[in-house]
Amino acid sequence: ALERTLSIIKPDAVAKNVIGEIYARFEKAGLKVVAAKMKHLSRKEAEGFYAVHKERPFFNALVEFMISGPVMIQALEGENAILKNRDLMGATNPKDAAPGTIRADFADSIDANAVHGSDAAETAAVEIAYFFATTEVHAR
Ligand code: CMP
Image: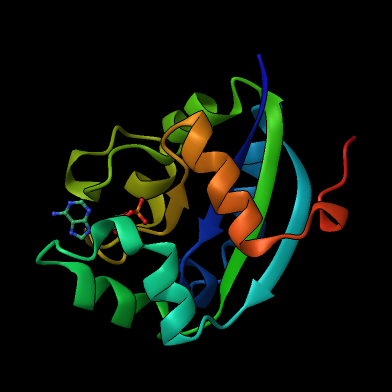
């Protein structure tokens, strides 16, 4: 099915200057950028985005990391975009990520893991709406 997913290039990957290399992987896989913005998240924005994790032991470290520098946020559109993006990213922990995946190539740790991607259709819709007005998402 044609899907949209929310992708974030995290502060570690922005700092490494690999936004373009990561965009190239999306494009080569047939995913189109249909919305994008660079943003330095406030603490409230990061806490709200990751609210589902607020009881987890890693929550505070995750929020601190996500506000440590600007992130690049995009909505990606394509056939099976959610799973396709997850395959491109690789496992959450870069130690477990398959060779050739974004996290294997660019991530340093489970916190500084280069990218976020929605895990299901319902969360994708919520996450896209968290960062983009409907007028900022461009069908193409
Ligand atoms: P992300 O896909 O952005 O969603 C939540 C983030 O929490 C995850 O990527 C990791 O960067 C971070 N995290 C830190 N520790 C863990 C953990 N033990 N399990 C899952 N996610 C973790």
